[in-house]
Length: 258
Image (cartoon, rainbow, N blue to C red; front, side):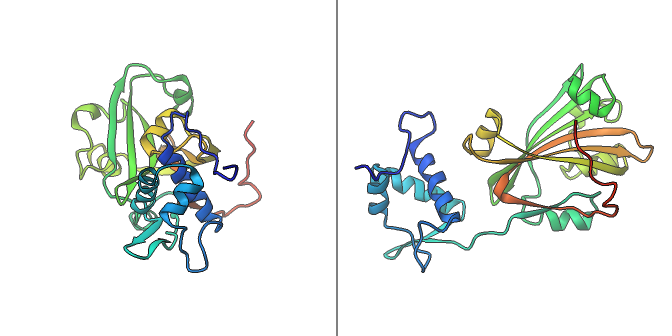
């Protein structure tokens, strides 16, 4: 059967997930659905990929869980309306802006790790102009329970003493804890946006494959005294986010990294 879709059955990535990724790509390219947005039958897809119907059913279940398709008893599987990507505004956030930008994101990110380190990593220290004890927070952003981004944050201990003890003590919110508990007010924030391949940790936490494109936003936040107090990296699944940038000085706003 030379017309079988290419699936690496000896790969550590489960076969059903490889099929899920491939069908998703074909849906986005409009090469698998018909004019009524209907997919081939479960049996036809199983034959096309050279797998059992049980495996194909698992792949379709993942697509349905992510809201990509709708399965109707007696009719088959249909492509759902493609949800609009999350709009992230790269500017100093106000409550109104953040409410708009993250209106689809679950309001309480899952905290995977909150750890104090005695020494700051040199790369992070360079961004923060700091080399003392530091707190590290790793969180997962979700939409409808599905992971969509990994957020990593570094905070110098001198700004947030005992953060590992008090935690996010104001409404389980980092921004509210920093502003209301520690009295930190943001003056401005710089952002660097890169398209990167996911790390093994991101593959695991976001339930993606290594060929998934990641949009990584690295941000440094400054106090009203222009002192850097927070460095963060947020890795978004690439096809799930759009960026809006407000530019007021086009002549001086572009900088080439060296």
